[in-house]
Every structure is written in structure tokens, then in C-alpha cells.
Length: 65
Image (tube, rainbow, N blue to C red; front, side):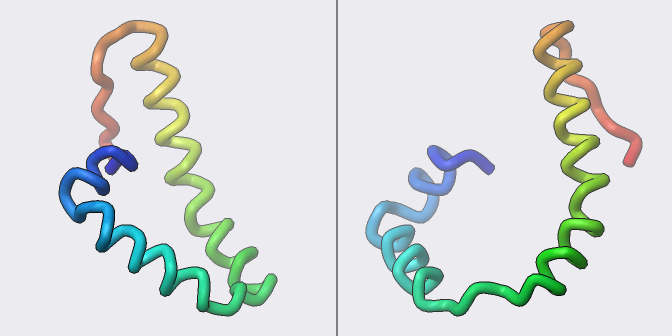
């Protein structure tokens, strides 16, 4: 979901509240960041590949994953 979609659906006041609450949270420990990175990296690579294919061809590409 894009930032514009978040804004349209949730509204600026609610998004400001979410950001304010998120700013109060402590940073995650490095071990958790490393673990999440290993989990999310394959999905990010698929997304980047799909986006690059769309840019080149102008055609929506659907992933089987």
C-alpha cells in the first residue's frame, strides 16, 4: 500500500497518532533486525524483480510465489 493510500484510508490525524506512538518504541535489538532481514530479503528481491519487469515492459507481472 502506498503512502497516499494510507493517507486516504486512515486520514492524517490517525497517521500522525501512529507515527507518534511508533516514535516512542525502543529500537529493535540487532539480532532481531538480522533475523527479520533474512526472512524479508527474498520477498523484497521478488518485489524489486517484479517492479523492474513492469518498468521495462509496461505489463503487470504476477508472481507465482
